[in-house]
Length: 109
Picture 1 (spheres, one colour):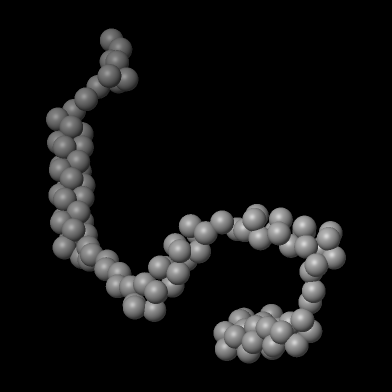
Picture 2 (cartoon, one colour):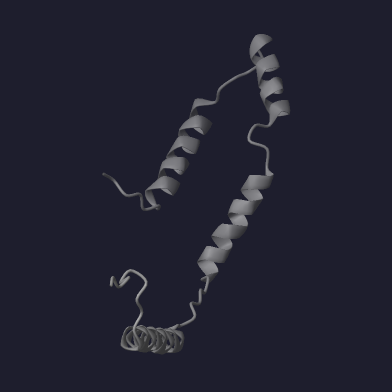
């Protein structure tokens, strides 16, 4: 007489599996509830300087990159020989630009 042990299920094996599954479910529920209690909300505050920078950036973004009418006027003046460079004004503008740039902090690598 042969006994088929492939599909053999005993009461103790089924009971162990049920207890193990219930224990895992309890641990998962406890872990979830402790994680929920530990969750914190994030908050962000923007400084007034950041708000000013954001406003300046949006204004600059709305401006055209090139003033085509000014470019055309300068091209015409150059081609007609009417465009004159004032060396003193140019030097003053370069010095002013460099002074403005020296006030900014750039990371030098």
